[in-house]
Structures are given as C-alpha cells and as structure tokens.
Length: 399
Image (cartoon, rainbow, N blue to C red; front, side, top):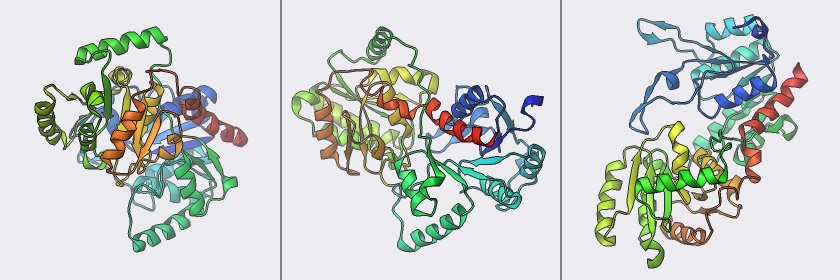
C-alpha cells in the first residue's frame, strides 16, 4: 500500500475478486487515483477453486488484482481459512479504523463477511453504500419466506445511505424494501469488451476463422449457449426448440454449447438422437472456455440463448457479452436483464421452459443480417466506464 492510498475516501469490501467487478475498481482508480481501496476476504478466484456449476477447477485468466489498490485477507490457521462472524470480524475492524473512510461500499449482505462489514460500518456511523444484484423476480418463494425476507431487508436497508442500482429489477427491489429514489443512483451491470479495439474487418476475419475451425459454413445459423450446463440455465431447451424449427431453417441451424456442467452427458445423448434424425452433427460442444479466448465464440455465433428457469438468474452477464459482439439474443422472463434488453430490436423474451416460443423467436431473428454494431449505442449505458463514472460522481462529493 502506497502512502497516497493510506487513507482512501471509500473502502469497498467483497468476498473475492470477480471478473465483472474488478474492472470497475480498475476504472475507478483511473478516474480517481487513490480514492478507493478494495478489501477481499480471499482470492480464491485467482488461485483457483472447484466450481460446482461448471463441474471443474476454475481460475480466471484475466487480471483481477491489478490496476487498483487492493488488500486480500489471507489469514489462515491450521490450514483452514478464518471465517467472519455475522456480527464482526477483527480483521475488518482493524482496516476500517486504520483508514477511517468517509464511506463503505458493500456488494452483498447474504454472507458472513459482508454482514461483519455492515455492522462495523453501522457501529462507527460510517455512511454505507450498496451495489448488489439483489432482486425479487429470480426465485419462486412461499408467502412465509417472502414475508420473512421482506422484514430482514427492510431492517438492513434502513442503514443504507446510498444504493447503486445495477438494473431495473434491482431498482424495483430496493424501492420495495424501503430505499427511496433520492438515495439511488444507476450504475448498471457491464462487462469488459475485449472486442472494442477491433475493426469490422478484424472481427469478420476472427468470426470466419472460428466458424471454420468448428466446421460451420458461411450460411449456417449458429445458435449459442454460454455458461454452466446446469438445470437452472436449462440448456436442454435449445435442443427441444431445434426440433420445432421450420425445416429449411433447421437444415442450416447448429447449436453451440460453450461451457461445462452436470447436463453435459444428457446434452450429448440428445445430440446423438438429433444427429440420427438430421443426418449431420447438430450440437457442437466447446467445453469450458476462459475469458481471454471466449470473444471469438461470440463472434462466431449469430444468436445467444439464455433460457434460465426461475432459480436465481439475477442478471445474465453472458447477454451483455453477446450484445457487445453484435449477437441477437433470446432470454427467458426469469433472466434479470430481460427488463433491460427485452424491448431491443434483436432481443426476444420467452416464458420459462417454452420451446415453441424459443423456436419462433429464433426464426424471427434468423432474418437479420449479422451486424457487429447494431447494439453498440444502446450498450453505452452498460459499460465498465459508465458504472465507474456513476460511482466516481458520488465519491467526489465526499472528497
């Protein structure tokens, strides 16, 4: 930690480095050098860990701890990580007391570490800022559970001084449970765009190369699924919808799965049946692809499908990535970002589990020519820079 960063204006706490939040901290450092210091409970996403959804070891291949002021709490005893209590953590107390920040930024309140930070801020009467993806549409809940959940959120949010909304569903949730509009600012979810510096010709060349590598012809319609192959995300629905496509479109449609997970074997089994009927390979499986290599798969695709069930898809950042690459998209109405992108020209929203609606949507989108920039202007509100600028504006009022 440098002398310039010894007393940051804002302390931001998170459980571990996350590939779509770390770039925001990096951009904040560029805009307001030394104003924000980030404290992580651990760095498991950098060191590597077993992700149950992907069913494999994960270690992100992009820099998550570079370009901003960061401290990782790595205290261990007898080989076991130190765990916070819900109401306090001496490591957190020491850092807050040493830095004496003018505000504390939290990204969730449903884990021990974050609640320890929450109570530390409340005890010291330090303004508490909140930026999380929490919303009320992602799960089905019983009335009793919904009631208890509401009471807890109302109590916790009473101490929140400022909330940064990542999207419309999140804004609805915050309003519903007691945070007034004048205590909210929009800082929408965004993802880094690795394609931003490429020319159209370069994108075309990379698209053609990746499609040829996978055996796709120029006229093929490539419908892609990106993410964990798990029941929550319902990747099986693509294969059901494929069988419902009109014959001419079905003849040139290929399904591309980029990811891994427990449904991998079932997807392969169903693909064998589809292949026998079609007389060709229908589903193509790229496996898990890390961040540095994944952009070429988005360029190769024509449409993304995220048909998640109502099991916790609070946003769906693969949709952001696909739109940045100019793909069309179909999402279920359980996907959080459906409220953001659902009215856009090349985006369709379908009911959960509705294969017929998915087939109809894919047919309607197949008529659009591939265009890398059709969503570019609208995506300006969903960039890393836009989110950081919204946070920076409020930090300036403190400084």
